[in-house]
Image (cartoon, rainbow over all chains, first blue to last red; front, side):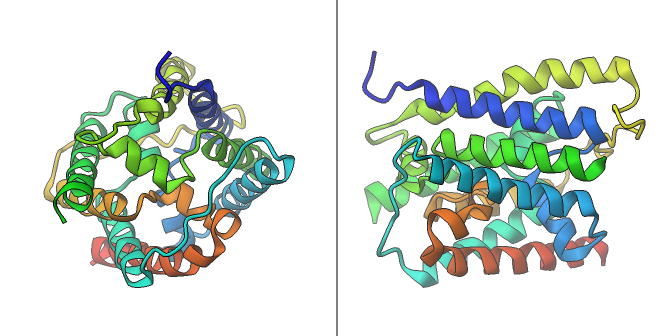
Length: 137
Length: 136
């Protein structure tokens, strides 16, 4: 097995998929984080959207406090770069109507051509960006 | 009932993001660095999720209604328009720059509070602004 191989990524992915299906089969809503958080910013601020975000924080905290795995904390990243990146991630997922979960997990899951195109574009642009920052600059 | 389903789904979603290491930006950038020392493991995250969601959405088409009796809110747009493409390009750029997409970003108050305030607040402002643009 290559050294990057681990099953936790697969287990995590299966959990994310199962979570998306609980929201879908339960209340008929798409588990797209940018969509749900966007609702909380612009309305309608439904109770279920708050519950999902609070649940995410509980799940993340549960992982951390259960001491299941190492979670390295990055230091020294430029605050300006973080803020610029945060802004364009927000604007981009807002006008593009989805992110890795809404387009990637749910959109491809329902075989939407729009989501397949969006996912290919944001993955390719992200990889090209990393190529520039890691190998050129 | 909506609250209960959303809370359970959120807990599993947040735990899954952490377990899969999507919350580690070094890991994410390693996955995106196809020309360098490529770490393909995060492909298993989306792959694993799709193993569940593809059959799930397929089955739901036959079901017609959710467990609580509410309609499935199928997204209605089907055309590949300019906002979709421009939005995906911008998102990819921001994701590649620092390694956070919106899901992991919402967990930053837990996993990296110092970076959370710098990244998450602008992201929220960006989402709000984009929604304004779409309504205009």
